[in-house]
Image (tube, rainbow, N blue to C red):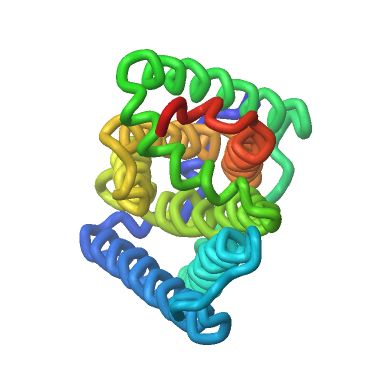
Length: 262
């Protein structure tokens, strides 16, 4: 990673106008709304198909498995719609001379990816430890719902959704299309990083204040490695490893090890 940011920035087409900024934000918000609607629709269809909401007897572990599958189906729908819409939006900008979905190997190859992941793990562990010591109730609020899902026999559906689907969809939207386009508007690099991090955190509005801060900081870090390495592959791998590690830890952790008496 010995190249300069200025050299790479100067090679990009200059769209820099407030009009483009507004257009890009509108496309991103519309994408989120449509994908969210798809997620709710998929969950409703799943309820009708399985009869999950009907008053009936469930076999041992059946209800938990259905609830986990319901969440996974909703996430898959959100992610698929997001990817499709981002690809369409990116195609429009590509015709104007810019493409924001670059997945090439970063300078330094696997070593750069591993180094970026390790730094994220270290920073997340430090902050997570701080939150656990400072406010265990907030920690339980953020971890509790996922810990319950991980106890179902089909927890691996969440692993696929969180470890593959979420990084692909969210990185394409936030660190790919949105960051790449905003980077060239009057708000520049730091404004683009902040806006994408805050919008990404807004998707996790059910988290505690500590959780929202964590998501925002991770979003800033992912924007940094996206800019520093020049490829979307770096934040995608970081995001995927981070999510996958959390899911596996929750799936195989002893009962209540994270939640105490929650």
